Length: 281
Ligand code: ATP
Ligand code: MG
Image (cartoon, rainbow, N blue to C red):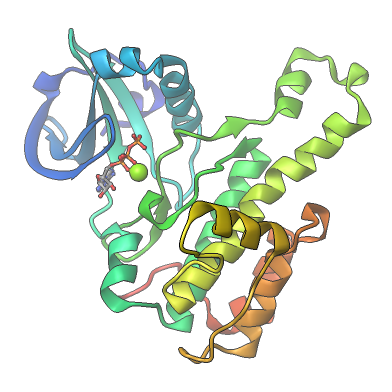
């Protein structure tokens, strides 16, 4: 797409600008199709949502927030939202196309990932989250289904449906920071560390093929999380460095979890992550 169009997400796109191709997936509220902008031949993914559904579930505020947050983010590991438009019944999101599909599918297909692959994804995710946190965005819904891969195997965070701009950011923007209680400021650090915990869970799942606190029912999972009931099976054989990183992320006290910067400096990442972020299957 031309830069003029990219700079202006509110530009009047319409369905006539696109050729629609094969379906790529089905979400809770709509479908995603491969599409090509006719003028530039630029290939994108078009996410189609039904207004009726959005209104029925009162999701318009959340959707608008998702769209606003995602259009403002520019990072190689964050799926781009180029723009959006709507007609009488539908809302269309023009998204960067992730040719490699869901990381989840790759994980289920191979059972678990090789350490080099896992470390590359964790490093990419950490960099993307550092960028988001710097922009005061907390994703809060990072899971393998929301991680897509591009044609070179580069990880892309998608689905900003549950992300939030931190309250501190809102206060800062309103210029009311002076009146903020210490626990509100504290709360910021707490909020952000949610994503760090998730990195630990994902790292474990990448390497072992199952999430660390899996249980028969939700109540038991909840109990295991509260206790941080963490154990490392002997199969598959996972390096001590990887276990060390996981143990430093799955820490109950959020202020004691390894910071994003420290993750990137961790020996396991240093030894295993591909610096280009690409990951052949
Ligand atoms: P939501 O959480 O917003 O209701 P969802 O998570 O159910 O939606 P999406 O994740 O947006 O739905 O899309 C559904 C599926 O379509 C994805 O899991 C993925 O397989 C495919 N898909 C979505 N976006 C893209 C994209 N940009 N490139 C390639 N495939 C995509
Ligand atoms: Mg999703």
